[in-house]
Image (cartoon, rainbow, N blue to C red):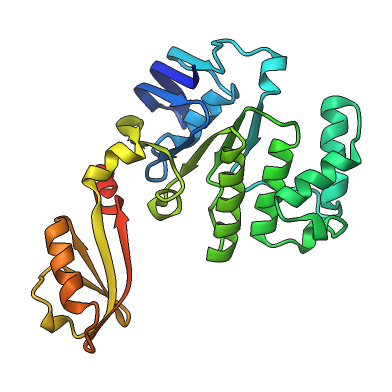
Length: 291
C-alpha cells in the first residue's frame, strides 16, 4: 500500500484575475515508510502538492488518495501531522504549555508523560518552561514538528522545514526526521534547496512550473550522480577545465569513476593539493530540471 497516490492531478485556481495552473497532470506514488522529498524552485507547485496531501484543498481534476482513501474523514486526518512553512506560536507560551493545549483541543485530555516524551524527541525538554519568544528559528521549527507528531500520526508532512536554519539547526532537524523514519513513519517534505534533502531522502519528486519532471527512488537515481571533490591547492596543476573556485577552496565534479580514482590516487598524499571532502551527489543532475 502507498501512503499517497496522485492520479493525473491538476490544480487550477484564480489569482489576480488570471488563471494559475499550480499542478499539471501529476501522477506519483509515495511508498509507506519513506522520506519523500518534493523539490523544485520557488513557485513550482510544492506547497500546492502538500495542501492536496493534507486535504487543505482538493484537486481540480484527477484523484488524490491518502492512506488508502480518496475522501478523508476527520478520524483519517488525525493520522496526518503537518508543519506549515514558517510556523509561529504565541510568544508568551512555553513548549510544555503549547503541547498540552494541542492535546486538549484535539483529544480533550492532557498527558504530561507524552508531552515530556515528545519534547525529548525534538530536543526541547530542557527548554520546556522557556517562553517561545526566546527561541531561535531552529527551536521554533522543532516545536512545530513536536505539535505535528504529538498525536502519533502515520504520515508527517513538512513544508520547507529547513528554510532559514543555520547548519547546526539543520542537522538537528535531519536527525529528528531520520528517527521518525526509523519508527516506521512516512515523511513527505518540500524544499527548494537540493543540498538540504539529498542525503536525507529515500525518494525524490522534482516539479517545475507545476509539471512533474522527475520522480524516483534515490538509489535508482544514483546512476546520474557525480563525484564532488572539494580541495585546496594550485588548480593549475590539475588538468581539468571544469573547476569552480569558491573562496580559497576549489570544487571539481567528475562523472567517471575511473577519472575519480585516478585523481584520488595522484593527489591524496600531495603536498600541493589537499582534498577536503568527496561526495557522491545528484546536485547538478537535479539542477538540470530547473531550466
